[in-house]
Amino acid sequence: MTVREIRVVPDPVLRTPCDPITKITPGVERLVRDLLDTVDDPGRAGVSANQIGVGLRAFSYNVEGKIGYLLNPKVLELKGEQYGDEGCLSLPGLWFKTRRANYAKVEGINLKGERVVLEGEGIMARMLQHETDHLDGHVYIDRLEKDQRKAAMHYMRVHAA
Image (cartoon, rainbow, N blue to C red; front, top):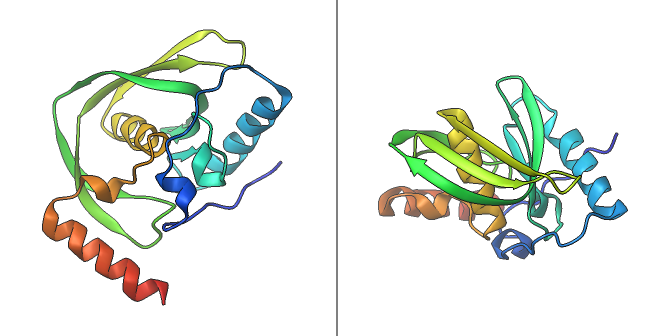
């Protein structure tokens, strides 16, 4: 079991779009095992590969008792709206109300190269959007309204010292 250290902002790996996985290798299989081990911790809904320092399009999730992973995720559909508290392992101590779609549908592949579709509402939808954002080089504070983003940046400056 390998629980990997979580990278925190301002680590540049978190702001770099991740590369697609073009071949399932033993390294990709190890990455998935590490992502699953790392997300299997109380309070963790998802972990993206770049959060553990790997620039590949993969994430793991732990939502409502279901633990899994997805490679090369791509958002297919977003519907509705939710506005609720969101945090991030890469931004410890920060929680802000964030607008997200209330329903999300994402497709990718598994380690066998088979197509997988994940979808859901509420926390599942939030996680799918949050982790896909990570893989695109974004963190959730990028989605905050101006005043909230300013407060988040101030908090990070004060607590980074």
